[in-house]
Image 1 (cartoon, rainbow, N blue to C red):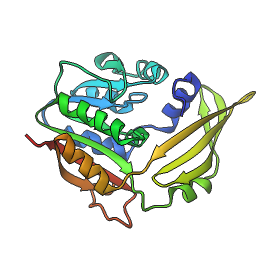
Image 2 (image 1 turned 180 degrees about the horizontal axis):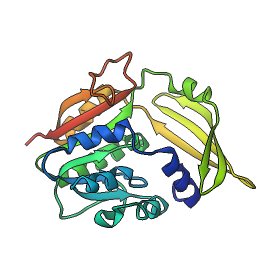
Image 3 (image 1 turned 60 degrees about the vertical axis):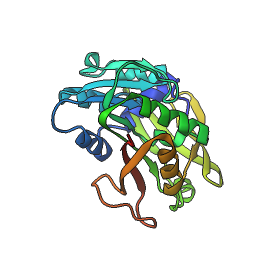
Length: 241
């Protein structure tokens, strides 16, 4: 999706408030103040919530429009914002917790892109630190679910916007879709493609990157992953060293 469009970034922010997923990731940082890196931070909901809880947070996202929204939030001045991809981000900083939320992991469409993002995590992970991210369970027929999804109405800056999703096709691990946004006087459409890798494949890529999987969780309440039932595959890993 074209999150470089300021209007779509505003809609994303309205449609994705703090929820059970943010509660889960915040729980990984509980206790003493942590150094947290959020790769693909979007409009900064989690980042700003974490600094409010006393953590030191860096938010990284490739879309300037998303970061522009993030910088207007309460506590945003206490977050270090960086415009970069998960693959390209580099810093001298080391972190206690590195997260990739909002199913951003599924935007990594090739093994090379995944390996590059995992290399970023390994490079910036401090001693005893953890990595956490989620991807949707590919055993669920997401294309069918999304094709049946009713349009959603948002109110953004006082304007009514109707969002509708159109599934274009499913090919192996990939689903392509178009999202239509009907504004008062204009319709904007963006094309997206997501990957749905298996638990086994992601685990293998993690192992080869130098990370060890410590937990695989199936829902935001912390329940175990069940292949045929869980909607999420949530990985929590740490350095193999």
